Length: 436
View (cartoon, rainbow, N blue to C red):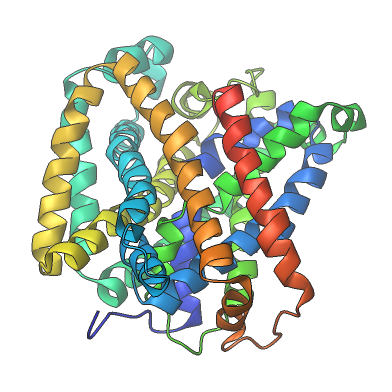
């Protein structure tokens, strides 16, 4: 695409990628997953899979987008056209549909976060029956207004472009998010009884490593944490300058996303223990358990506001990446301006989400379809197309362009066989287990 936008440099790109990966899953899912599967013992397979496999996937998706100067649809199309095949764009539509599906339901959850931030500011957590309140809010028409607000915030940022919107917003939100997490962690760790939560997180229960489910969950979490799906990181990679260091960017993205996830765990789990609440509450942890904690803890009003502000930053930073995928596809396929593409995607995404706003059963079915089938399938397709069809040798050359420490030939076997086959395993295991 002529005159394609670019990130200003490595820092802006990494912050945008950390923002994309550091979504609600890091704050919502990672803490109780860590505690439920052996504490520090879970970190052994998780860190292994993240830095051995997740980083490989990130390098591949970054380089795939940069090499073709296009998002998934255009990138697939160009690679297959080289081989004399005409169905590349059709295959490339699959990862784009997967990410677009996540965008549709994710903005609804962003709306929930905005609502709870408003509740925190109002100081009403102590006056609410929080389990009943969430049940009476999510899946009800009232949530549509907050869904719309989340969509408008995301629309405003993405409309401003790569440097002026995506990069600039993440340069503000990501440092702020880390600072807030550090402040909240200090407060959480000073609560009476919080050390039981630290023990829950850090004292390893090595018996969990003998359970295959621990390894499967760690593998799925590693892929989820770094946002592999064949489209989201491909489109960010397509805005990279040719001389940017892809291996370093991938490692930094995985590292800082992992740090943020660990900080989140040390905010929520010790606080849950301090107030004798279930640290393995799963999804209710964010919208029921945590507000209950802030409603009773000293200084809970201020810390509740900070916490949900932090969650907003995590949610919106991911939402802008999710929106950029279909926006880039519309710009590329229909030659529309960014503003028109953003309006079209936002309008259609919002309208498609309204039935999910008012029917939680439909919300769950749609989310499962997208996250269990489409997104992992997109990751597999992108890996196969880049490392097999485009060629793993050429892929390594593209990854090494601008790299301070180029990858050796040994990496080709790892990427072509180990990573691609593991991606297939993630898809298959996810289907068997009903998702991670």
